[in-house]
Image (cartoon, rainbow, N blue to C red):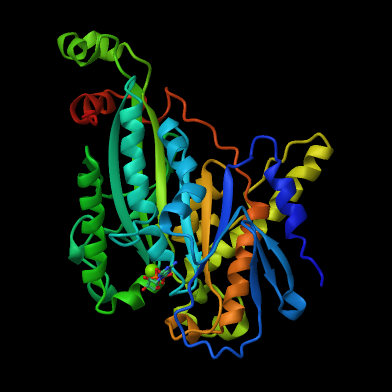
Length: 419
Ligand code: ADP
Ligand code: MG
């Protein structure tokens, strides 16, 4: 059986001198809920903690990732292996992006949100953020959260109420939300509501409000959620605490200015639309309006990152830096890729969780070509693993909104108090 080239590429990538661990690609296999007839041929096998083996003809071979989670692994295990380190580094000042990719019904939302007894990446990240703040008394933190949805290439603010999310997907009275870029904030959506939060409960409540808006907006929640991308962003601002503590901050305004600048970083937690809309074949292309442009463009960008990388490498051989590196990549062709541009182009730590379901099932997923979709997801995961290189650096204390008095005033007023 031919072994795919994933292994060599993965190994080369993971030893990349400064990129090590900056990009994690994991695959999670959800339990088969369906009516397996038992006669089904063995198509896939999980082989240890990092490998999946495919027995499917031409596509057969071993697929190696940073993690392969099996049906026994709960959300806490997934979080610990695939997101915890990234979340902690966001608290230190790096940008971080976690996203779930996979066809509808394979466990993206289950992994990101989880349930009351099995909380997912989002609630576990929130717990961790506040643990980090408690463990880091020499710095003070300001947290802001936003929650948007990309649906039919329109951005909806999920924190401004149910109507804002677009009843039945219809355009609303809401002002159009656009993506902008500046050197301080990177790519950001505007106008977008950002809530300042000071406790885990508050943060969870804001996100629940967004989930609710999303639910109200779609008469068929599942249909909408399978076609939209949900993006939670938590902006973390921090600065050294003034010597002498809070008291001296209050008594002496000058000492409030004494510590270094404010460091700003963003944690993006993204539950993508079902990848069955992104299958890159003729049959699907003819479905017209059902094609999810954002997801298609994401696939294209990730695939083309490799030629970009090769170009950079060959230019380096010639001792000539590549000037137009990245310029030909179609980031601007979709809302999602534009929003993810900093992450995909190397300015963020990235963790991609690809969800698949192996075996026949009675779920929505079974309505689509199951094996084909699984392969598509695994190939996407391999390409992401091989092609994305992160050079993420800790945000400079003088960067971000750190320079302006507004940010300092907000920190003075709304910093998270350590209980
Ligand atoms: P997606 O968001 O990818 O469309 P969901 O997360 O909604 O899929 O999962 C579909 C169904 O399968 C849900 O009922 C969910 O609770 C269940 N499910 C998904 N993954 C798992 C898992 N790893 N363990 C148990 N149940 C799961
Ligand atoms: Mg979902």
